[in-house]
Figure (cartoon, protein in one colour):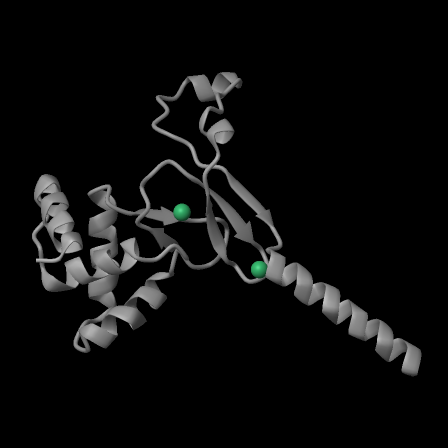
Length: 156
Ligand SMILES: [Zn+2]
Ligand SMILES: [Zn+2]
């Protein structure tokens, strides 16, 4: 048995989850990715190994894994939920243009505390900070496209 399979077996047992091949495949795939795929992406990838798998099974499996605390849903105002199997304490850098989500480790953010009264009424389990902006690739793309626009203007 591969190391990852052994780890999954242990985790699923600890959470009282049945190990169906599809469940294991979905979880294994998610743990191997850092790009926070959508349910649709996950479905397309898992379908290569399990051609008979339905989209419903994928959605159902994702919510089961989420309830078990093995994965989390990353929502940031986009229309599709994205999924993360990285349950270590981390934050996100979100590109508003290409929608890339990058993991960010930052001890200062980990130690954030709440100063508002309202927050203190809650029993806080955790927090995650999301920074929105343009990734390097998108910045370069917009730089080069505004350069070519400038060229076009000059030639007109
Ligand atoms: Zn981007
Ligand atoms: Zn993440």
